[in-house]
Structures are given as C-alpha cells and as structure tokens.
Length: 101
Image 1: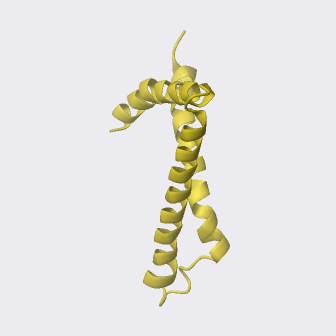
Image 2 (image 1 turned 180 degrees about the horizontal axis):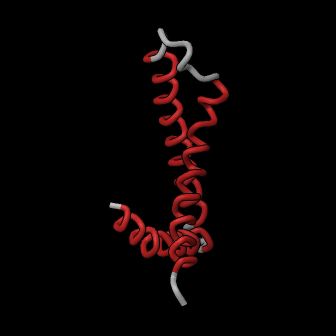
Image 3 (image 1 turned 135 degrees about the vertical axis):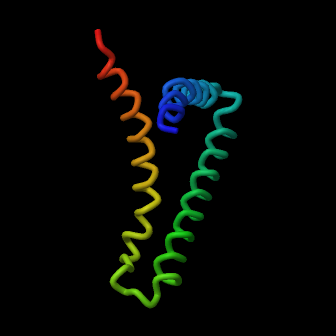
C-alpha cells in the first residue's frame, strides 16, 4: 500500500496540480472553478468539524479526560489538511533525496 501511495503521489499529484493551476489561470474558467473549489473546501471543513464535534462532545460526553477544547476541535480539520500536504511533499522529497547518484 505504501508503494502504491508513493507512486500515485509522484505521478498523479503533480499532474492534477498543474491542470488545476492551468484551469485557474485561464480566464474563461477561473471564476467558476475558484468558487467551486471554495464551496468544496468549506463543505469539507464543515463536515470534518461536525464529525469531530460529534465524537468529542457526544460520544465522549462521559469521558471528560478524553475531550478537547472547542478551539482544538475547530482547528483539527486545518491540521489534517496541513499533514496531508506534508505527506505528499515529504514522500516526493524523500524519494528524490534517497535516489543514489
């Protein structure tokens, strides 16, 4: 599974990123695409916050030692996005760093 993930991140992620950059820079599609990306991003953030709030305050209501503060719950989706970006970049850099020359 790690090999497949690394191969996909090395081949597919840059292609998708370049295509997205091209579509955003093209004047005909840029407003629609940026608004669509904003809506998808906000929806993903809200869904992730709802899942974390449900876990924290409903499922762990009898375990206050497990519960986190509201600020931590609201920042968790942003941390997950940051860690996902770091994982993609880290896999690519690790492979390029360890390629024997």
